[in-house]
Image (tube, rainbow over all chains, first blue to last red; front, side):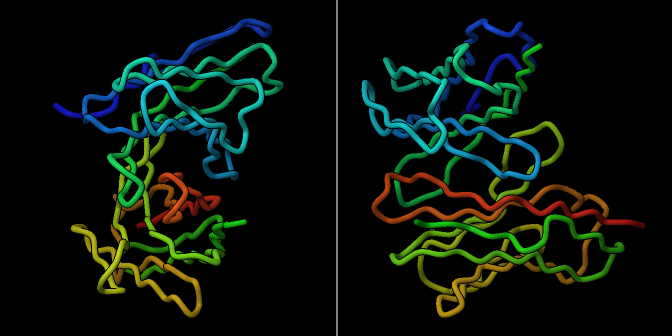
Length: 112
Length: 114
């Protein structure tokens, strides 16, 4: 089955720890995206990558880092510099700029 | 800067009643338009999209949306809703020359009551 897999679904971490969220796709899409969702704020773009070994900051990149070493994978690291990391994180991929994005099931991160 | 505004944060409606979820966008260049639906603790699923051609687009489960360029709107409608339509709905745009990044509205929570 083709799709986007995010893991884990729920993640708990102590304040001050870095944590990495996994995103894998087998759709052969070039572009991948990370969004953060908070209640009442819609989705905000953290980072995106249009090709392997290249990525760009989105609107709220501070406190986050990414890598794109393989076409299929786009992991997101939430660092201790992120002031308010508790949120729902969504990964997406797209075959190109002129079509829709496909989303994973999300990871809910809770920092205590 | 481009932006998307969903005019209603919550829309309560009775089953079998019609519903309209409003979406306006601002952009000085051409856009592609999307409606996504999200059920609790899940990812987003594409409901329908406007890329080009006919300004009226339809989904397989009875929703439709009309692209109105002069009013920069892309309102979502359904003539008769079901309990199962209860979900959060997001309007989004992507700009031709900006690498496919989606800009989302704040979301509209549709609550269908029996």
